[in-house]
Image (cartoon, rainbow, N blue to C red; front, side, top):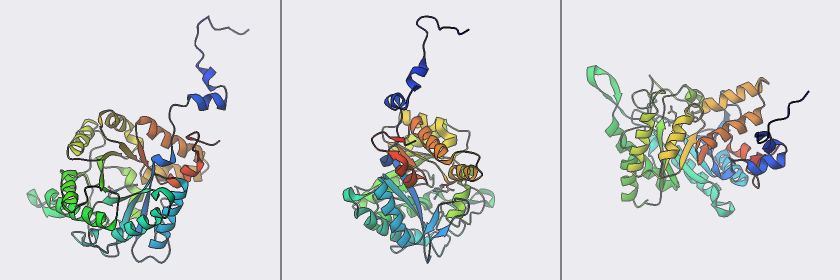
Length: 344
Ligand code: PBG
């Protein structure tokens, strides 16, 4: 015997009965324009080189970088985030702000490829950090601290970031993205850009950036030689309030956008930053988040497309306006722009 529900009893399932109704009442939609594709360009490569821990992602040559930007543009992706891998590294990351350094060359290539597209293509952004350029792999220059410990020198590093941001602006980037978690980085970069006549170049601040195991595959992606760890500058995984403080400081220093990174394990921080921020909020679905889904899917343990879509939807739902993801171009190709949801 069936039990009819009492009069007035609610049936939320009514809004799930058909794809038409589900489409109508869907609260969160991802659009291609929300997505930013991170791209790696390596100096001196003849052909793109696969990154084994990130299946489907490569280190680009300058020529294939242009192709990747064109593909992203055609798919309607909102932005690209460039990382450069130099042939030579040294203690202060000389190549980071060299006019002809690989990242500056990559920016010029990406801007040119993007502008071929009607409407100008994706916004070109560049990572403003030293770790790809230093031989010790830290995000700043080193000094000897108390008790003879080797530490990252905050204020000496700020000078390097300022110079790097100006070099990136000269190469044509739309946005610089300081990711080194140095105190005062946004303010110093803003002043340097303005003084050099680049008041129109934006700053996407990696504000709440945690010292995360999920950056593992990225180290392979940039051939990193990191000695030690980043715990004296990136944040402790347990600290949410501190993430809000970092976002507050970056806003006060003039950040045009703030970011939470990684995304998936920090959705509470993302939601809290989205609540307090007066500027758009970005979230970075990092290399390890990518690798986990790819690895499980390759084993046939999860449905790749459904898992990718769900993971990005969760980041959007938590409050991200902008989402950096290595699936940006592919995911954009799955989205129905009339619908903002993945086609079945
Ligand atoms: C620093 C930087 C890192 C990532 C983006 N910018 C590495 C780090 O902080 O250790 C990681 C991105 C990823 O894992 O996908 N230049």
